[in-house]
Structure formats: C-alpha cells, structure tokens
Length: 438
Image 1 (tube, rainbow, N blue to C red):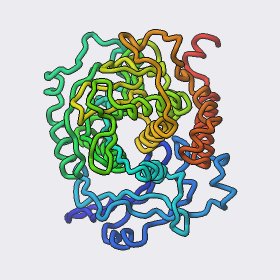
Image 2: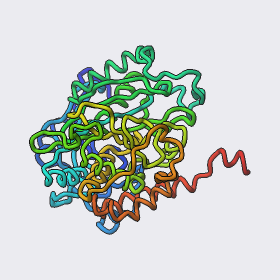
Image 3: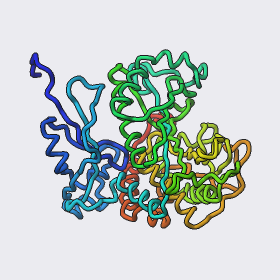
Image 4: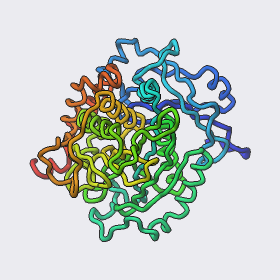
C-alpha cells in the first residue's frame, strides 16, 4: 500500500445501469471528467446484459454475434454528483449505453423507459411518478449467512415504531444529508414490519426517467451510507423466510398539457381513463412478473400471507390488492402498483407499468369490479400471478404485447439473461436437499 500524507486523489465513477439494476462502469481520475462529459466512454454492448454475477450471456445475441463490440456510454447529467459517504473528492456520473454510432440502444433500461415516455408525449400526456422502497439495515456480524445469524422469527413487530427510528438516528440522518447533497427528493421514512426494516418514500416528479434515476442513485446511496456506519443495507426481496419482504411500490398519475390530472373527474371513482389504465395493468401483470420479480429469491415474497399481492386484483384504498387507488383529493388521484420487489430494476419496473397502463388506455379496456376486503385470499375471478421463476420466464418470453409495447430485442435479451441465471441456480444442490435426501 502506498502511504502518503496528502489528500486522496480525486476520482470519478462513471457507470451505466444494466438489466439487473447493477452499476457497470469505470473509476477514473476526476481530471478526465471534461472528456467524459463531452465524449462518453466505451464498454462492450454486452455489458448491459450480463447475468447477476457479471458473466457474459452468450444466448443474448450481444456477445459472439457482434464480435463483442463496444457501445458508447454517454452522460445523462450535465455534471457529476458528489459521493458524500466516501472520503475525499469522489464523484459519480450516470451514463446510458448507445450503439457505436451514438444511436439509441433500446436494451439499455433507461432508454427503454424513455421510449415508453415518448409514447405518452405523443398523446400530450405527462406521467407523474413517485417511488417507495423497502430495505433492511443489518449488522454484518449477524447476517443470515454469518456464524451468528439473527433469529428467524420476530418476537415483536416494529411497524411505524419511532423507537426503532431512534436506534438508527445517525444512519438515517446521514442518509437524509446525502440525499440533499445529491438532490434526491426523499420524503418520509418509516420503520417497517421487519426488525431493522425501513421504507423510504421519494417525492413525485413529472418525469418518470428522473424518478427512476433517483431510485437507482438512492439504492447506491443507502448501501454506501450503511457501509460508512459499519452496517449492511439490503434490498433483497426476501432476506428472511418469516419476516416481511422488501417491496418497491410505484405511484403515478397523469397530467394533460394544461397540468390537469386526467385520472380525476370529480368523483370518488375517478375518470374512465383511470379505469382503462388499471385494466391494462391487470391484463399485462402476469406477462410482466419477471420484471417485478427478477430472481429466484423474488418468488419467496410473492406467496400467501407475505403482505405482497399474488392475484391480479385492484381496489380503492385497499393495501391487499395489486393495484390500489389511494384515497386522495382529486388533483392527487393516482394509481399505486404494489407488485414489484425492491430487487427489481426501477427503470424496467416503471417502463413496464407505464406501458401496460398505456395499453389499457389506448385500447379502452375495462377492469373487473374492484376488490373489497382481503385481496390476498383466493379469487377465482382473478388470475394468479406466476409463483415460480420458470413460469414467469416463459410467460414473459412469449408475450407479444410486451414485445410490441417495449422492444422485441429487449424481451429476447432479458429472457436470455434470466434463463442463464435460472439454469445456474437449478444446477446447485442445496444443503437442505443433502440433509433430506442424501
């Protein structure tokens, strides 16, 4: 190790967001920032579609067929952002993957979302989006895979508990400060059902791409601040079998060119356009489940009794359904989509939700009657979401509506990535199997 008495050399992280929501890029001297801002940097096109562990996915068509050629990663923001949880002058800059000639590359999750938003603009509509994300803050010495794991069952519930917030005062204070420095519009933070679990709401913005940027940056920020406090933050969908899973809820409304909320018609029921959007969400929910639940662990959250939706249901002011219309003043009339886990890619979640809603509005679809009471119980009139990874994969891969609404190449590439991950897990013999069958 080189020892020196001066301050650390200023550095810059430049990265794209891959299909799994992982940040892929380079760390360079900060003096190179002007060149990156002007010219971008190169990465293989296949870097956008690596599997969860960072391996190439030969079946995605981006490796051997292209000669593993480079794309160009161009900045999405005018200036880098400070990284307050790292000592020294350390900054980061988000970028997007383009083709080598700088034309759009729609497998890039951010550009995929931009393409969906452009379809809304052609109608003169602006989606207003807000995100809610849940995560656990854990002691590394007592994580599930450590020598001293925490107990599997809770002795008490900590939902909305102020005392629990007090135990993490320093962490939460630094998290809020880091959000202010990075201009991430954080709002409320609550203690959730799991011990050490929190939910943070980001304020709504009339720009779905910006909302997704905020979500991606927030996840990195939370993990970084937790590390600074010698803790570990996890957005894993279901870290504990008997504890609450981590969800990613999306709220959105729709404005016309004059700024009027198109989901409001002055009634408690909301406008016909609201109901058309809900019908589209329900119609394509099972096709899109692979995006909402992208990994093996994701499906441990989508089970009965887990406080996560398992049927294609909707209702007014009902937190047990998949699509909720919260009670609110007319100008705040909105939809809350409650299916995705916190492990999902925010760009893809928002893109698929907005695309499905647009499908319903353009086709003027009508939803079934709203669910009253327990939406977790069995509903014969509603479709059950895919409850296994392989089922969701096949449903996604064969969905012509998603290919039409999003991008055929994206569907092909994302399915190839998920299949490679699925097959790798399928080849692993678990400790429980050895204990049971050997």
